[in-house]
Image 1 (tube, one colour):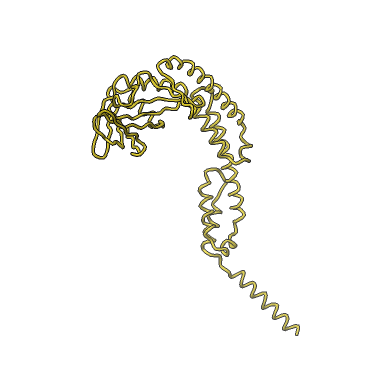
Image 2 (cartoon, rainbow, N blue to C red):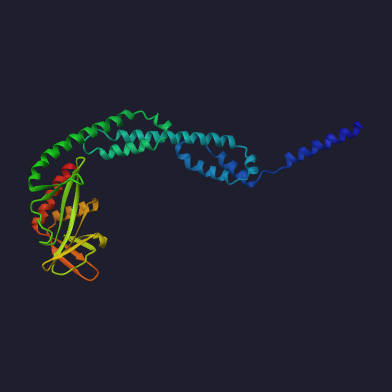
Length: 308
């Protein structure tokens, strides 16, 4: 009986020895272990190599992952590279803040770049930014300079208000400013002329596109040609006002100006020749913007630039 037990134990040991001793590591696991073995001292430039190894490991089966001999080394390398990346992000933010330099009215872009970089960090990373007070003070200084400059520009712009008449809309609680050289009546002539109101110390420009003539155009598109540069405006036909009297017809629409429209107004103001085409499905009408209307546009832009 004892002899049988001894033989059984010996057989079991042999089976276990053969299983573990004869089991061959998969080629995939061997390849990944070699990649890990080739890692030297981890530096930030090794980030791509670490990512490649990480992707290779993710493609292994669970059994192959268990075959890796150097997984611990890789985990340490990955932790190191993550720490280096964190330090690099923090360093980049600090450098971005240092680039602000002396704060002037031209510093807004540099300050915004630094703020965006800082806000991209995690809350934990933000705590490690050593010069955050520099950024905070830069923003405060810029806001003060901007406010002082705006007050000065607004004060200087008051001289231009003498060219405008005011009209209060009690229902909208808005005061409209119309240039005194703007046609008093809508049916006098065709034009493209801006007017404005002021809201929270910002000038809001409206542009009136007006066609007046003997025949309907039923325009839905207006094209401005300022020294060869085109600006296209398309309108919803049902937003355009149409009227007629004593043989004359007029069609007009007023819209609040966006950045594209402001650029268009500047182009007209600076142009030697500026033309307008009112275009409907079947008819068109062209006009040339006269010097009077260019002067109106220039005066509106002077006030706009002072406030905005």
